[in-house]
Amino acid sequence: MIGLSSTVRVMLATRPVDFCKVMDGLAALVRDAMGVDPFSGTVFVFRSKRADWVKLLVWDGSGLVLAVKRLEAGQFCWPKIKDGVVRLSAAQLAALVGGLDWRRVHAARVVSTPAVAVGNKPDGQAS
Image 1: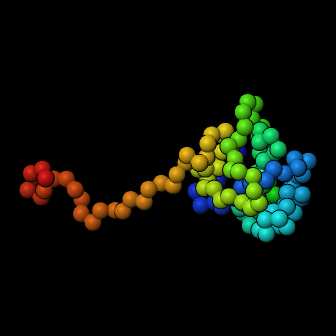
Image 2: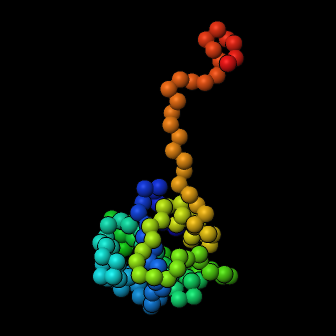
Image 3: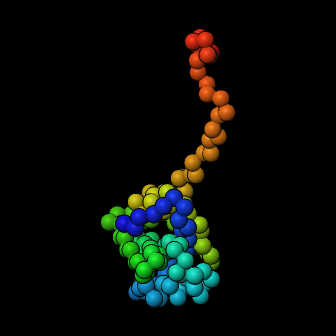
């Protein structure tokens, strides 16, 4: 699988695509229909009509990478079919490709660093 950082941009095409399309056809679709540069490093995700296949297209800096996955049973969780795209996090993409419901994956909570350590008082007594 493609190694993804947590900061990678992921765009999911909501409409099914013709799965005869390969790299050049999908890159043209990204450029013309989505209005995005296919060579930006963003991961673009496409589904088949039956939603049991997905294709991922990404520029890795030296060439286009195309990954394909077919589920042996069931379908990939997909948003309602409409024009446009849905943005996913890297964790949501991993859940999607794993055949899980990516909508249940949420961003990590932001935890602020405490200004003072909590615990024992300087004289050794517990707080």
